[in-house]
Length: 317
Image 1 (tube, one colour):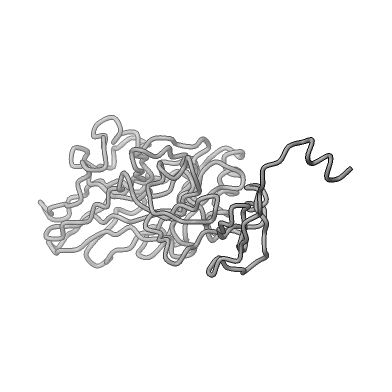
Image 2 (spheres, rainbow, N blue to C red):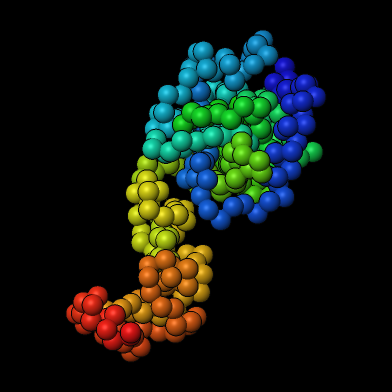
């Protein structure tokens, strides 16, 4: 039975195609979006057995009979017993628990040794509303883009289902990889879509290969750009109230914050700080120009003396 879906409403096709084009042609946004830090994992579903009599939607069958409740519960290894027994496995998008994902599209690739891992012909299914894939999909080193008409907000989203087997009892694997023709990205439902690069990819191992399960880190650290152009390393949640987070594992050395050119800003008390011109003026300082420095301090104290309004009027009468 062919599990892939090939017919959709015209509106779904147009909406899906526009997102797919953005996914494949864009280089991705520099600033983290709602799907940042997300990963793709793969899980063997041992409670669901593949057969030609399966219903049209195997995605729905797995949801009813063997749902994956959290990333840590994924099964990443299949023992070949008996040889050639076809099994089902699914690909999931997984996001940190503290995030608020809005998943509208994903690009992904697959790779495996097709002399040891065999996919049942036609036995794959997209769990989205539209799929655009390479001509040889799902062969080794091929890719697909999957989209949903409405953004998915769960922290664990089923993306694809495959049926296949390993016949010779060898240690081998089925690997998730970036899309070979555009890279791996999650897209949200903004127009245009914000693209977040997929942080890591899982692997299903057969026999002695244990597979790989890269569950997302709940509180990753990254560079946080503050309004004064300084940079601190902190979590996204801590940064959101004071600055702009640059993504997981980004660093402040060198400072990568996209700020205006700075210069010395002098205040009446003789203190000096490096600021952009707007920041200096807003703070009541005097801007000395781009690339001027505070070391040595170029600022002078503005003299202040006590007087009275009558004395001032008498002086300038």
